[in-house]
Length: 539
Image 1: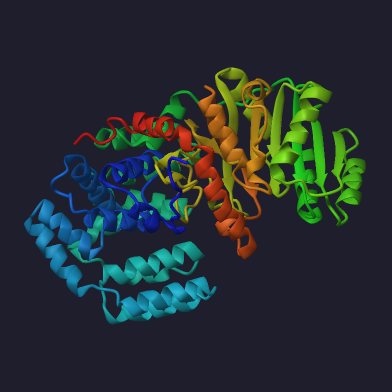
Image 2: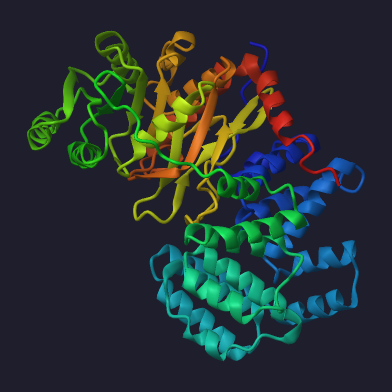
C-alpha cells in the first residue's frame, strides 16, 4: 500500500483545511468554473485563504484570493471584514466611509444565531419578526435588512417592510444590485425585473454578477435577445465565467430534442428496488407516462418482502402498451450487482443499444429519454449522459455534475454536486462535459460496456458505484455529458444527507473504498483538473 487514506470530516471547511496553497487554488478554480459563488462557500474559502501563511508571497494564491474577494464583494456587499480587506487592497475615500458606517450597522451575533435556529425549526415567521424589530430600532441598517430580506425570500414571507426602508446613499448601488440578485436566486422574476428597470443608472456597472443573473432570468423567461446582450455584458467584465459562457453558447446553438427512434431493442430502461413499493409505484407511473415508445422497462425487485411485486403487476395492467419485464432476486444483492444483472439482461437478452438507469424515487419530464438519446446520437464520443436533478418541489437544485476537486496521496474528493441552497433560476440549463453525473437518471451506450464491463461490486450495498463507473468511462476515453435542459426530481436523500445514521456508516466506508479504488490513477485525475483550470486565473 503506497498511500494511506486520510479521513476528512464531512464539510467544506474540513476539506479545504487538508490542502496546501496550490491545491487550494485548484479547488477554488474548480468551483468557480462550475458555479456562481454563494455566501457560505465563499466564507469558507475566504477563511482558508486568509489563514494561509504564503498569502502575499505566492502569486497564484494571491491572485485567487483577490479574485475571491472581488466575487465576495458582489455576493455579500455588507460584510465588514470584507470591506476592510477591500480597503487594504484598493484604498479609497468611499471605502473608508462605507467601512466606518458598517461598523455601526451590525447584526448582533446572538440575534443572527437565534434567527438561524428559528428557521431550522420551521419558525421563519418568528425569525422575520425578530429581525424586523431590530431593523426598526436601527433605520437604514443594511446589514440587518439584508439578513431579513434573505430570510423572507427563502421562506416566501411578506416583504412589505421594503416600502418603508430607506437605504443610505453610500449603499444605494450595492443594495439594489444585491437585492436584484437575491430576487433572481429565489425565483422572484417579476420583482427582479421591476427593480432592474426602476434602478437603471443606480447599479454597479462593473459587477458582472448582476448581468449574469439577469441574463439567466431572461433566458428562462423566453427573452433570448435580451439574454444574449446581458451575458455579453457580463463576459466582457469577466470572460472566465465558464457557466455564463455556456449559457451564452446555448443561445447561439440551442439544444433541440429530436424525435428519435424508440423502436423495440433500441433502449432498455432499468430500475431496481428494495422494499420501497410506494416510491417505486410513483416512479413507474411517471416513467410510463413519458415518451418511451417501444423501449423495454426492466424492473428488478432486489429481495423485496413488501408488496412491491403486486404493485408492479398492477402498474403493468394500467399501462399494457409498455414493454415491462419483472425480474426478482430472493435476497438483496446490492445496487452494483443489481445494475450488472440488469445490464446483462439488456445486452444479452434484448440486444439493447442504449441502457438507461433510474432510481426508484424519481419523477420525469415527458421527453427525458428522447433528449438524452439525442445527445448520444449526435456525439459518438459521449458514453454517458445525465440531467439536472431537483429536490421535491422542483425548485431547489439537488445535483448537477461533479469534477475532480482533490486528487492527492491520502485524499480523493469530487466537487460539490450543486451550489449550496441554490434554487433553479435558469443558469444551469446548459450542456457540458464533466467527470460524473447523477446516477438517479442517466443513459449509456452499449459500447461503454465493452471497455467498462460492470459496475463495481466493491461499493455494495450502494452508493458511488455509478460515480466510479463514470470515472472509469472517462479513463477509458469516453466523455460524460451533463444536459441541463432535461430535469428530473429525486425524492430521497442518500449518504450523509440522510438522517439515517446507519447510512452514514456506509457512506464513510465507501469513502475509503473510493480512495483506494482510484489510488493508482490520482496523477491522471489531477491532470484532468489542472488542464480544465489552466489559465482560469492569470491575474
